[in-house]
Image (cartoon, rainbow, N blue to C red):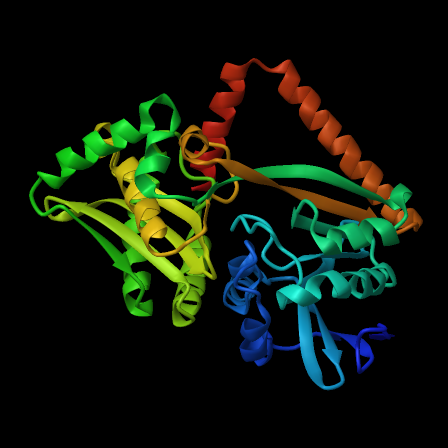
Length: 388
């Protein structure tokens, strides 16, 4: 299906078409379109999305919107289509779910996002669907604003999802460290001095694709060790998720974005941190550490040394992405918020689906309120063990 939009500032009319074929066919132009200065650059990239699609596409069909001016692609919005509960159709972002993608939206050059948002919103509003569920928007995203102005308020709702702390890197590392609360900076320096005296202490930064893929094994092991005492990880909970990360990390490393840091002591990795450097930003995606070395703050030391490196390397922002864990809030000096837009069709089927979903969540929340916190904690741990 096609939709043509003429914008006054464009020499050629804008055409939006649905790409239902192989994502790899779009790979080179897609990576070129992604704005590296956008905080969601990695999540919007072909490297990330194609790995997600190869891993989690069962029962789904691609619904990738490609905008062209004449014959030249200027933007890509990666969506998929899947059957809804009552036999209709659900549209959603590629990249949603367990892998924790933040700041999803249009892959395009930065100066084009604002003017292209409205045509994409109008195209989506014209499509038949029971549910449009776009989870992972950054609040204030131009496409989100355009959709809110295009889809009737009676058919759409926007829910808060996650806070994403970040560090704006200004000045020098020593000054920044001295301003951290609760003695965090002094603790970092003490723990670093102690670790530097231990045998074979080192911090390695892996950027080669093969090295990063091998290094992920250490990250996974340390991550699972760290979360084993709490019933298991909610972030890396299956072989499929690990396989996805190997694919995505290799592709991101091929484009020079991926970074995997290992803190080694006494001949073995004791902490690991995986993220991406794009534009003037560093995105902290996942980490892990050996619980036996927790009292030595190996995770804090590794984090601090990476932040130090970002200061010296000209990085302007260190983004912790989703999650308000205490250690993130101690290091951060700002935050963003992500939201989820849900819209439904006006059909009876969509109304029934929406009513059923609302009833389910109300019952779920009522059950949670009725149970004591100790029982809820036991249930969470039991569920994690069953999933693993």
